[in-house]
Length: 156
Image 1 (cartoon, one colour):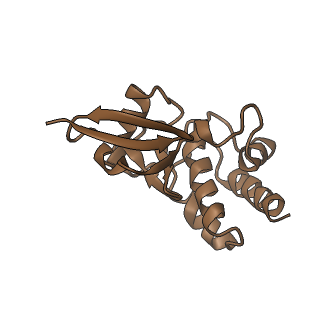
Image 2 (cartoon, helix red, strand yellow):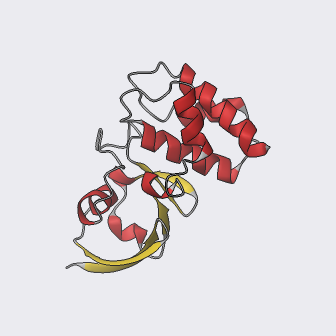
């Protein structure tokens, strides 16, 4: 039996009917056409599907869509302000951390959630957050470099 859920995604309220067992990634990509959230492993390992739900980074490939009911969600499409990129996006680009780009939306969402919760987090905490994501292109050094620069700018 389908369930009706209501949630806010990227600032817009949505009410949708979902089939039991539908994963949140499928609702986001297929029903809402927000394709910046990437499907990678489908077993919560690679991190490409990370979104922000109620301020926390969550893997949407393993999250039943019913759990989105009454939640506030951001996908990569909601991180920037129109054509103005978030400072994390800007600094990852500047540091050369964007290569194929497949892992980037999940990493950006992970870091936005981390800095929103703990702006003064340590480099170790940043590395721990980044380590939740599989990136085959960059070697992670440019990601860390860009992240640390973004943190400095966010802290002013």
